[in-house]
Each structure stands twice: as C-alpha cells, then as structure tokens.
Image 1 (cartoon, rainbow, N blue to C red):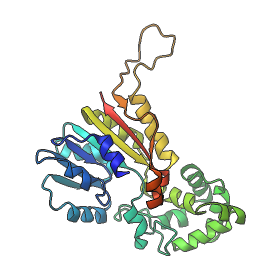
Image 2 (image 1 turned 30 degrees about the vertical axis):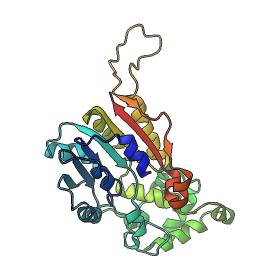
Image 3 (image 1 turned 180 degrees about the vertical axis):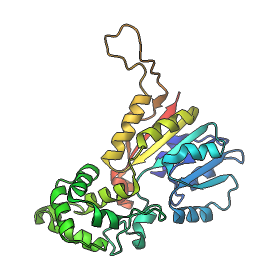
Image 4 (image 1 turned 30 degrees about the horizontal axis):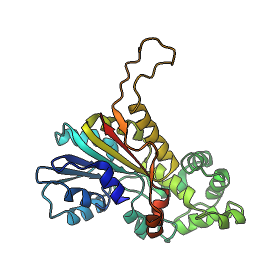
Length: 299
C-alpha cells in the first residue's frame, strides 16, 4: 500500500518524518525521495539485520537517521535526538516480509527451521521458550487472545504432550493434528493463528501500543499526519480506539450541561474507514489482503 501511504502522509519537503518500524526501508526509501535537504527521515527498528539493509539502501541520503530501538521506546529516541515535533509518522505493524521470508528467523511454517521468531535477536525470550516452557493454561490463553484460535485448548494440550518441540515443521504438524481434518483443509493456513499468537507473545507486539500512538500524536506538528498499517484485528482495534479518542472532543455524559472532563480533540480522521489494498495489489502481494491503513491529521 505504498501509494496510499505516501498520499496519506501528505509529505512536506522540509518536514521531519518518523518510520517507527522501518524494516527493509520499502516505505522510507520512497518517503525520503520526497524530502529536500532540509527535510529529515528517522527510522527505528529493533532488528539489527533490517537496519543493516536500510543503511545500504539509504546510503545515498544524508538526511536519514537510523536507530536500533523498539518503537514503544520512541519517546527516548526522540528525546535523545532532540526532536521537538514531527510532520509525519508511519507505523507498519507486525512482522516484515524480510523476516517471514528468511527461514533462519523461524517466523514461518512454510520453512523447516528452529523455533525463534525474535525480531530482536539479542533478546532472551524466543518461540522455543514459549512453546517448551509455558504451562498449558498460559499457552491456551495466548492462543485464544492473540491468535483468536478456537482450538486453543486442544493445540496447547498437544504442544505440552509432545515436548520438546524444536522446529517450525514440528509445531505445524502438532497444530494440524489438534483440529478436525476438514478445518485444516478449509482454512487458508491452519497454522497461521497459532504462529501469530506465539510471535506476538515473543515480541510483545501489543504491549504499550495504545500509549505509544497517543504519545506520537502529541508530537505531531499542526497538520502533521500519522499513518498506521495493521494486519490483524487485535492491532486494528487498538489503532481504531486510539484514533477515535483523539478525534473526539468532550467525553462527558450526554446530559451534562457543562463540560467537566476537559478532553480536547487533537486529531482529525483523514479516512473514516480503514483503507484496504486494491484488488490488483492483493493479487501481486497476497499478504496485503488483511492490511488496514488508518490515517489521522493533527489539528
């Protein structure tokens, strides 16, 4: 959804732009092309491999700053860089194509690899620890909450009974055996929900997301825009709620004669409903099928 993001950010040539999850610089490489020498692009990622790729791909630009950090720690990043205001923010949530397509990272059930799923390879917690040390109750909760998996209890039970589980293919096989055969064939990827849930747990993908969005909105200059791309309902629900609250003025009960809450609207929704990928893009890039783009403008 590159064109939709570039259009939605309404890029100002001299502005300061923040890509909170720069990945392989797919979006940022196009954003920086729209900036003048006075403009600036800041890219954050907690995956050092991704930052190494970005450094190479953006080497021709002298107005790019790359920082190894979790975007949830963005306040420290901006404070360290002495950034007072931003003209645009992009958050591309979830796992990157680079991570999914790299078998060694253990994100995908399409490759037989050691269970890992760490976006930051220096952290201790990996998918191996989650799968092999969490209790059945803990696993069930994660699969049900983060994966919205209806067979969470059965899958968790079979995981515990088949330990140790070393690889993605082993885990995928256990998942398939934990649900009716007709469901395995009916679903477009019977393993997706479980792999998603474990990945979210390993990387803390939903932790402080709501608070981070609210903070970034406060850092936007007037007329600045924030664009957030999500890929599953849990992420989108958080983004939607954060945008809704910031796009609402007084939140007192309807019959309150005078506002006593003091809540002020700070954001205007650029798109009332999420922007979806076009049919042509979905055919070229099937991963874009579940993508939802929400954009807000600081008022």
